[in-house]
Length: 437
Image (cartoon, rainbow, N blue to C red; front, top):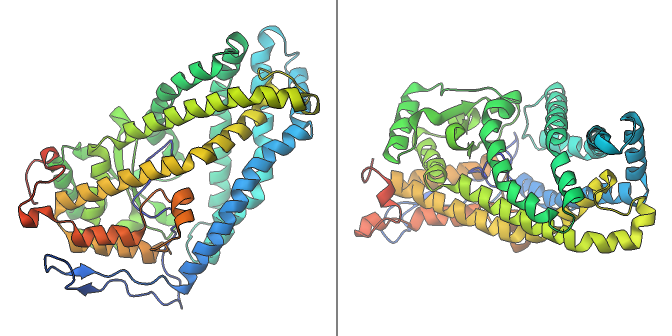
């Protein structure tokens, strides 16, 4: 699950604006088809370009996963990690005594640079070339390059500051290191979530108050009804990067906030924006950020235990080829990365299933807060068309890639979920100041 924010309202594989010349696929169509007799929103078929984006995206996802496993494996089996470790020791004046700390920091920096360069062609194609080819990006090559270098620098500084901790535990407690690292994950993730909106995210985009003050006042009133601090709604200038539309919740404790992309504000009608905000307010009110941190920590703990149980056997069999025989050796970093990636892949279906559950509940919260079913359905249809989403993806996609329910299922919920119309109880009515806005 994401560390810096919960999954946003848009569908995961989705990216924007239907390119010129493509059939837009009926943005919305209202039909009297719901049980209550109210208008229903129809889900349009995806455009041919959206289907191509979906199908090729699945193939590129497999490539990216295999590449992410292959790079650390190659560094291990070629002995390159051990040679980088030896170089780091020489640069630090030796790896014994206190010098193991600077030697480890140097090794981490060298390893990160090697991985960055190895990943660069694929990252450039997927993040820039492919997005432009499908008409989904406004980003200049200079902006993409600057963002990539900033992300590398943040990773180098942040990683060098904390990488010594697991290696110290590996040295001091080789039998329980995984437990102590796992227990430290939750406070570490809380710290990352706390500082990210203030120090990290502004490095890549400009955040500020909403431009439309009238709409902002309606959003703040909606947030107030749900008990969400009104000053924590921000608009981010994402149009410099993308044509997609999105919104998300980020931060922790004092930095907890709701963020709308300016593209979403520009392309959705006010009622639709309010439903989107109701969804994000739902994430906030239902404590999904804290739940996400708890789940991520639990999965990381399980993954570290799996690393502990399997790394010893691999070192016994391949240690000579790796160039090290102890997991506390800094050269083990690619082995740790490889095994964590493998266990993370195994845990992904469960993590995504939980994420989809949270997204459904945030949708339910938005409907109960706004009671605007038609605007909700229209918003999802616009997300589909603007982001080139497939509203009915295959089961393998849902299991392995989808952090959100399929668009068709979300629109169906918008069409049918209205307990207030029958005098039924609201699931989250106790979290709202009053009934309908």
